Amino acid sequence: MIQLDEKAYFYLLAIIPVMVVAFFFLQVWKKRTQRQFAEVGLLRKLAPNRSSFKSALKLIFLLLGLSFLILGLVNPKIGTKLETVKREGVDIVFAVDVSKSMLAEDIAPNRLEKSKRLVSEIINQLASDRIGIIAYAGQAYPQLPITTDYGAAKMFLQSMNTNMLSSQGTAINAAIDLASTYYNDAEQTNRVLFIVSDGEDHSERSTIEAVDNAIQNGIRIFTIGVGKPKGAPIPLKRNGIVEGLKKDNQGEVVITKLNEAVLSEIAQEGNGEYIDGSNTENAVEYIKEQLNQMDKKEFEAKQFAEYKDQFQWFLGIGLLFLFLDVFLLDRKTKWLKKLNLFNEHDDA
Image (cartoon, rainbow, N blue to C red; front, side):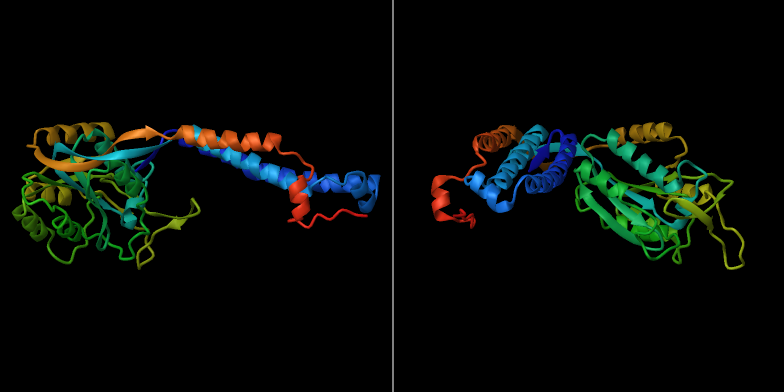
């Protein structure tokens, strides 16, 4: 397992292509200047030991040296030991609504981005709980299985968008059914499902039936409402620019509203609670309190430990290449000249 301490230093690698372009233009300028001074044949006689290959080789050494020095500044670390540690926590699954209605901007910047921020802030408050993520619209899609890797969870969370599922609409029952398959620990007594949505539900099958099945599997369902009851239109954007508003078959602008009644009913039937997600700080704090009150189950988790710095190897190799660049001369080496590997003939 590899960790990178200072990723910002990777931006310094942008100097590499700049130096290559500068070297190319320098060589072109040199040749033009030399041609103005004398003919090519005369120049070879005046400087018979000059090697054009050595100039390119010196540049390669310089670029390699700088690249390794930059990697040294990044400071890669390697996990040298895999440890199994004991942790206590709750199994939590987040089902995030990614239907088109989540693009409504009645809550800034829009409902989906607000949902992602809420989930991310909840994850920041967790210590040793296991988490999973589901995306759903007209169907549910497993985004991330149960894991303790919070970094991966945030990465998958940020990649979620309203175009990731071809089946539109909102089927909350599909999300609940899929979540029921996520909990792979039969001994876990606390299983929690957070449904983050605006409450629109177009399920063909009864959502309450799916909730009842989840309860039988020991799952508590909390719902987090995102949006405003008065509603808002759904903007249609292209490259970040609003081109229009979504309309129905009659040509009327669609107004999508937060359906707190549906979310409250699901939470009540699921032995959980409905949470207003309009205020992120308050919602996250309340959820933290609810999770802290639950019994924690002990489980084992494997993780890399004893990360060791590796920057010294990169710095050493980088300095070696810079040393070779400084002491490598532009003139031909005698033994290489005899081999004539680069077809650098002397003119008579």
